[in-house]
Amino acid sequence: MECQFALTGKGYVIIAADTTAARSIVKMKHDEDKIKALGSHLLMSYSGEPGDTVQFAEYIERNIRLHQIRYLHPLRPSSAASWIRRQLADSLRSQSPYAVNLLIGGYDVATSEPHLYWIDYLGTIAHIPFAAQGYGSYFVLSLLDRYHNPEASLEEGLDTLRRCIAEVEKRLIVALGKFKVKIVDKDGVREIEL
Amino acid sequence: MARRYDSRTTIFSPEGRLYQIEYAMEAISHAGTVLGILAKDGVVLAAEKRVTGKLLDLSGAKEGGYGGSGEKIFLLNSNVIGGVAGLTADANSLVNYARTAAQRHLFSYNEDIPVEQLAQRLCDMKQGYTQYGGLRPFGVSLLYAGYDVHHQFQLYHSDPSGNYSGWKATCIGANNGTAQSLLKQEYKDEITVAEAVGLAVRVMGKTMDSTTLGSEKLEFAVLTLDANTKQPHAKIYKPAEVDALLSEQGLAKKEEDTEMKTA
Image (cartoon, rainbow over all chains, first blue to last red; front, side, top):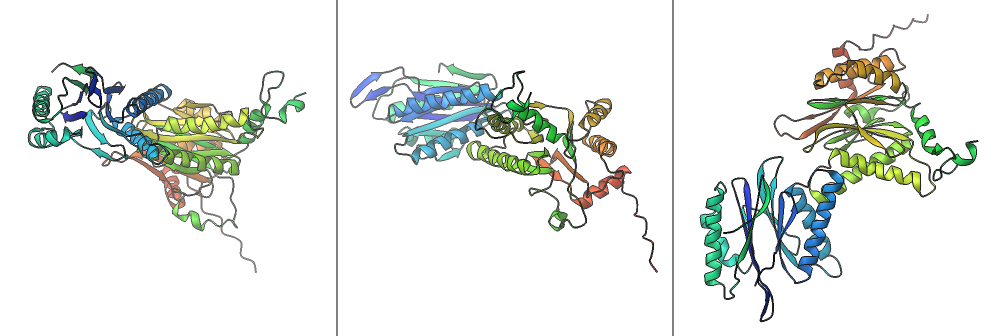
């Protein structure tokens, strides 16, 4: 029942994820952070098999950090996404694959462009202007088809995001509560209160 | 006194030296010169070939060493050209390793390997040969001329010990001391590729054994950025192009004296 979506705008990427940690009929937690900062200008939200998710996300985060320490310059969003996808693709062909779906949003400092990638547990990758994972995608993608503007200012982008969240709150059978929203732009990664 | 300690690469001598590495560098000092010059809009590599002769079959080389086997200069990846000095067989092995490493990086990261990272990969491997395995080090020094988005044009030099450093202009192989001091005198920070090409050819002319330069003795390569695609463009000169370049610089081989006709 997890829900994540993201959209790009003029010089930024916004990622929103629900904050519910639930098992069966029990909601254990309502403030779970499912969006990791992988680097100064890279965000990754994750969903999928509990346990696999955090294990994989931490593995990715540590390796990306190692790369930055070793080679001084941070991985660009496209290279990071390719590497992460490769990890999932290799995992799929192993004895016990990670069942994790991701949204990766980054700001490429070299070209001053925002980038968003949708990656699923099979290692499928899509480089797109807006994306969603989970049941929420059924409601949110058509809204974004209609209202997304790749040149939107941050305020416009946040308005579109609010529209999406309202739709999920209205139509998804499960109440997901608050959404955590993070943004990455030229100034780096930060959390936003809607 | 050193004898006892230098048959094994993996141990120090009493004075704290690794003799095998030093001997490897000695071997390189007898090899054909390779020099590299970093310009603000590109990198230039020039090399002296040692394997020459009338009976050598150069038909494969007519198209130039582009991506294939030159003797001294090799394409390592679309954004890096390598120049080698030392034992040719060792060099071929390292070039192959570098090419594989570059493709491995492309496989994982979907991007051209940053030049420094390629140098590091090779150096990590070379260092391994000085510490374990009981095998001798590679008797090769390499110059890496490359471009990446992080640091633009770069020139690196690595040696058998596994050390590497970045240079504005440097030289390896025979007469590298002479060439290095010539480069030091004439190099200017904002040099252009065109000026660097001229400088490279002049310095090679002064340090090479042969009195006149020609395509049988000289390999030449330039790495620039394509103006339209903004992608790195590696050009290893074909023999005809080397000759053309030398004529341009006024250093072409003179016409051979006509043989005396026998009766």
